Image (tube, rainbow, N blue to C red; front, side, top):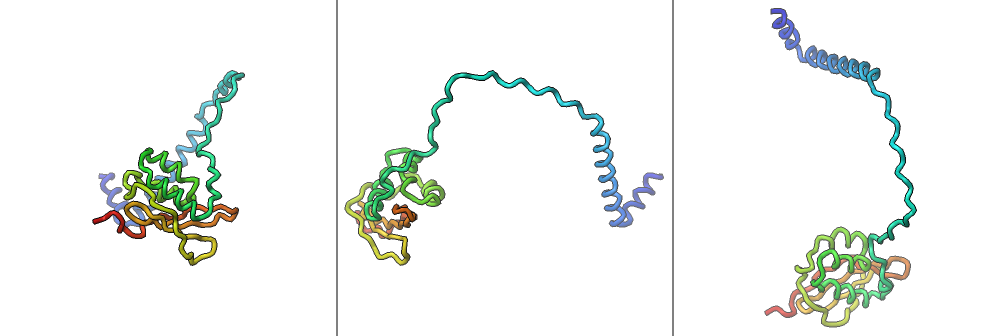
Length: 179
């Protein structure tokens, strides 16, 4: 009967209910923190260090292949080189991407090209040299590379150190080889 009266008194007001709930939580936290400080076990002695080895460390393998000297290609040659690598669907996706990454911007390689399956590239070969187009912005270049099924638009940016990197690849028109 006392229990029923106590619950009725507690539930009569929202403020009273939440106030008592907060007080109970704070009291529980205080009680647990006071009781746990005296019961903590002393830290055990640290484990002895592993024995020193005299063997030479294994040779380090670079995470990315070194940048090829072709990064300093002029825009027209860079566009053809990237187009040739782009249409090559023979290597697995990781190898295909590793060949392209040194020639493209970091963002384009990591975000866009990383999602491309080389088997889905809609062309098989480069048919001729790139044609440079007029670029609207200084420090950028645009080239069209003829492929067997389409023309590939290659947009490049000047890296500032005399090199160029591809920032975008896009099919320009799908007219060649279609009936």
